[in-house]
Image 1 (cartoon, one colour):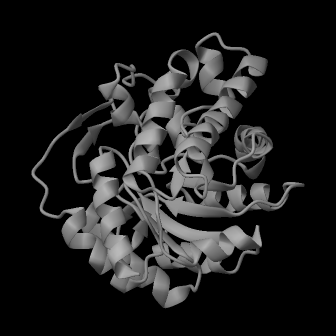
Image 2 (cartoon, helix red, strand yellow; image 1 turned 120 degrees about the vertical axis):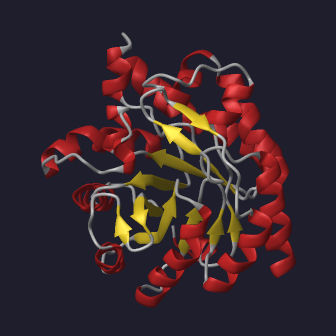
Length: 303
């Protein structure tokens, strides 16, 4: 655990989008299971995506388990026992690709927000309120299974709700097997969590919690990244993880993306993120292996 936390304090390259790369291989992603459909019927496609990112220079792969949870699978006639195997397979596929293409790489087990299960865009609003026990019932078993499957660390992604952040940290810290992890936030703007909480308040709270290995932001516009890094760095000494979208617009009703002209690019922005103090840099929705290769080249030059 200490070794991985030390690595996160350096400079590492994270992978990019899973869903849109799976779409290119014919995987259906425009329903409530999104990229988790491939865990059921096309694991080879997942393996290929991981392989492509490792070959592009990624040091860390995030598993295809963001949308994978028992409740969503149950809606599709999948038993709990089957769901456990499916979720664990997401870690196993990433490990297999890592061992083949980047033996020194890391596999981050992905834990998505409750809002992703709702499949209505709530991961971008945080517009839901659960009790701590309800969050525990939703998240705890999946976290346990991802750890059991052999993830090196946890990537807790796109969390839009402060009460969910707090519940997740407590659940992970209570696991019998300690594991490094970062919490990556979904933001409304560079100063505000998606649910309206001041981002500074969230960062301050996370910085005070034992075992948290990093604070990040993902699935937001590139233009938000530099000011968010500065905000985190002004409060916390924890590693900073950033993996934005290239700027396209998501429609949660149709579950489709609209391409828009991009004012920023990784080529232009990654040097700014490194200068501001980012430690782990990758991409989220709609990014590609070519983007990760570009990031890798810039990071390598910075060493």
